[in-house]
Amino acid sequence: MSDKITIAVSKGRIFDEAMPLLAQLDIVPRDDPVESRKLILETNQANIQILIIRATDVPTYVERGAAELGIAGKDVLMEYSGDGLYEPIDLGIAKCRMMLAGVKGAGPITDRPRVATKYINITRDYFANKGQQVEIIKLYGSMELGPVLGLSDWIVDLVDTGNTLKANGLETLEHIADISSRLIVNKAAMKMKPALIKPILNQLSDIIGNKE
Ligand code: PRT
Ligand code: MG
Image 1 (spheres, rainbow, N blue to C red):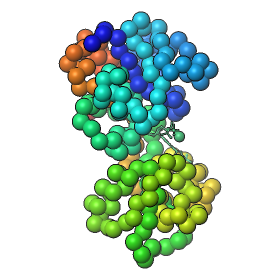
Image 2: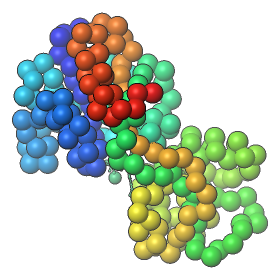
Image 3: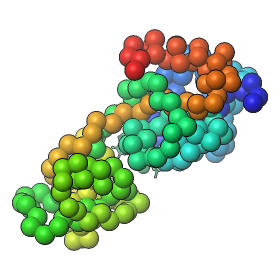
């Protein structure tokens, strides 16, 4: 393994909230990913680079060692199945809730409810734990449309302000999980590069004050 550390992050809200944390460790990207369109950002630290990828791809890159570290939402990690990852720190950023939602005022569904979601594993486990039979419909985005157009009765999606649900005539029904972003670490890299990785973990947990 080289003596470089690659940190995988997704563009958007996680990048925006993670960069101020990394800046406190004196890790600052040389380019803005929106303007530069680069997928690998060099930083002020010669041996640390930041990889910009899709949120759902972050665990894959880290588990397979293409990146030593990553920052990923708990939603993505709960949905991902793999065991080559440590998840040592809750960074407390990009917070939201995973919720079950449906058409406002629709009342109980009598048949086997149809649930549209991109989180099929989380949804399957949630209803299996409750002992409730549902039909799960996989979507890749804009889940809110499902109940509006009669594609599904309910959706499982992330909710922050609730404005998206409200704007589409939906309401929350059940709380499934609290979500925030976590630092994830490749298990082999933790053993092979402790001198590079441990200081980052220690400094981050000092900043967060919340090592798990
Ligand atoms: O956009 P892309 O398809 O590339 O991937 P992505 O949508 O997974 O990435 P991104 O950047 O949108 O989200 C990355 C991570 O941010 C997620 O994995 C979550 O951990 C976290 N996060 C925090 C959120 C939200 N808050 C959030 N509100 N991700 C998405 N939303 C969406 C939600 O799905 C819904 O469409 O925002 C809408 C609801 O917001 P409110 O404020 O209207 O309730
Ligand atoms: Mg998105």
